[in-house]
Amino acid sequence: MKISVDQLIQEASKLPPIPKAAQKALALIRSPKANAADLAGVLATDQVLSAQVLRWANSAYYGMENRIVTVQQAIVVLGMNTIHELIMTYSVSEQLNRAAPGYELQRGELWHHALGTAIGAKLISKQLRLKFDEEAYFAGLLCDIGKLVFEKLLRDADLHQTEWDQHSFLEMERGIFGLDHAMLGAEMARRWQLPENLVETIAHHHDPHNAGSHQLLASTIHVADVSMMILGIGIGVDGLRYPLEQKAMQRLGLNGDDLIRLVEQITTQLDQAKELIKLN
Ligand SMILES: [Fe+2]
Image 1: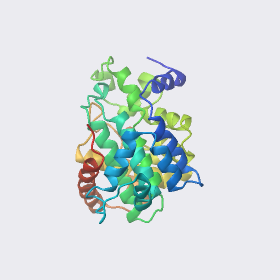
Image 2 (image 1 turned 180 degrees about the vertical axis):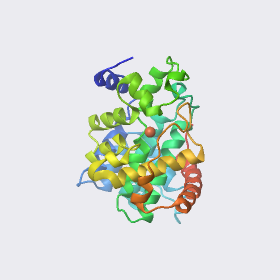
Image 3 (image 1 turned 90 degrees about the horizontal axis):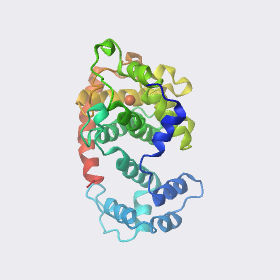
């Protein structure tokens, strides 16, 4: 089943879009002129999103002393970076929180894997003072977005054929579609006009040594992704059929004990994040 990249992107465009107000809010936050009043104005056009922002600001997670009653207050007390992260997470959850039968994933598995990878990547960036906390979070969140397109097409494929036994899942995707979910995800990110470091990192989250000047960021996502596999979250038909790049750990200066600690920290923070970004 060889399909052109354009056809695959066409499929990607059929995915439910990020709500208009969220798109506008995200664009505004990324602009250097962003201020709380303008952002509150954009969020006010979407009742669901405004209500969410207020709920986040008043959640036990942030432990504010006084009740936050306006969206503008919420933006000021949480800060632009946190609001950026929360709106992006909430928007992506709408896309990722679904079953992916093509990968034999139940509803929630793809989503929790993405959220945990984002959290893990940010933790690594913070602890090693790599100074790309936000980028790491977003790249972790989006690295498997290409799976959303493939999973529909994989539903009809027989993935248990022995001809694929000796191959990694990425090789199988390339064999079936001509490209793998990392390459497709990167192409989707490019067309959404996400920054180059995110595009390259998504493209190489399974082979960070090929990420050129973004090797460190890609290694961060790779290790966070591996941590989620160790936790057994979001493992479907592709299971553990991904090559692990030992050098990614070395590049970050992490050892096995660090990895175990990271997995524990992700577990705690993932539970908190799931509670914060409560989905129906
Ligand atoms: Fe992946």
